[in-house]
Length: 188
Image (cartoon, rainbow, N blue to C red):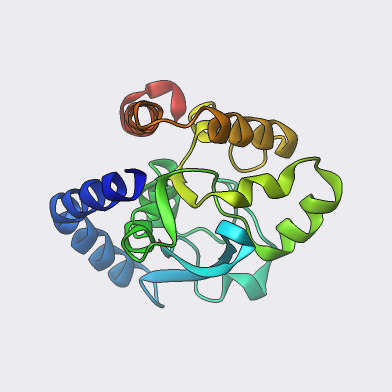
């Protein structure tokens, strides 16, 4: 049921968002040299690596300039990249990951393998989140737990989501993601 819901919603979203995808791609290409998409490796379900897709928000070769960061004030961000991150638009290409079956609309956010290796040693229950597909959004994210927030609290929310999962909960999380991501002025 979850997979069917993911595919139907994703197909509709891709059709509706196609003009926005094209516009973002053109703006990225015009304002910054380099590729339109960022492709990174993340650990997903059963701790299997997959290639995640995002709109590129940083200068070309940003990994060689500095370390990993999710802060909106990162000096490597492009002007359009800062905007895309603020409104979470850089995440839209992950609909491709959902169509490919690597991700779900809702679930724990995927991590880089390096962080998985570190967190599994120090955070109790961390690997339980890898029993389900990673999500475009999640229970932790709608509660403001993303980026440089407490990994322990994020894991607590991820495990709570896994235990309480229902289609109704996924729908609630999707609506709250849309509201908080695009309409709530307190999220800026």
